[in-house]
Length: 394
Image (cartoon, rainbow, N blue to C red):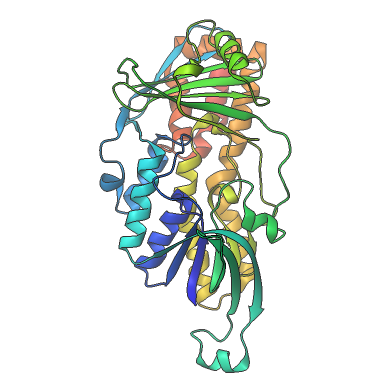
């Protein structure tokens, strides 16, 4: 038996495992993929991510060799790009395969253990009277987890708490009635482009139906990602990028390395906690990648998840802990979902977009203040302050 079983070894799961292991919990991570794994989303790490890694005391180790990002260039519907400076010390970019491996190594070094396998199902049961007398908490039940190991054999383990950190469309969430299968939403397609010019600026282009981003990963490699209302073939992607960027950039499908297609980019769990099962990271709710804050939110939410689990292990009331955890999720992620929706809506309203564009060209500090809040350098509520919105749109 283990104290906590965490399904998924991405940033949400490993940052949580790291904290729990440090506190003395017996933690088992269940991951179906062999690391290092190919993953090209979430390679932009702004202030929120850096702050969370610093609070975990692993920023220097996790971000060793990361590429600096000091500004963002934003163009909407063919407008001239507006260049916005990021607050000091700026953002960084790092391949997810590297970041994920380093976070997993840190969790294992702290005492967590790893099992290779795919989650199948789980069920909760109460402790017997005898188990209650000999167990570590008289009010705790157990969660029996069934998984398929790397050889295809069915295995099981028991945990006092189960965590779904297995990403959007989480198997843990759906098989425990905490989420329904996703429907609708945009799709992303992209990968890594080599042989590029050295830059410390992230480029974002917004156009009809979607957007295109180029995030430098090194002096010669960029993360190239196109987001559209539906999956796109190579020829469609080339045409879409040409339209969205007004011919400034090409998709270069033939040159893409580690190409992936991801979607639909719309998912939200109906319940974050179900007694002794909780969700964290994208398994709790997917944040539109437009603002680049998915990894930041996953890392930050792990602190609240760790507190909730500590409460459950100590015999706290699941209902009260669930309510507090949901409130923390709304503060950490919910506000950013609202902000992402408002920014997208603003850019797609011609009159508001032109007004905002003119104001920002006159005074870039308006958009830079909003960018600071979005990126985690300032409180998220600052981006929605009436004063800032008035300066932007009045």
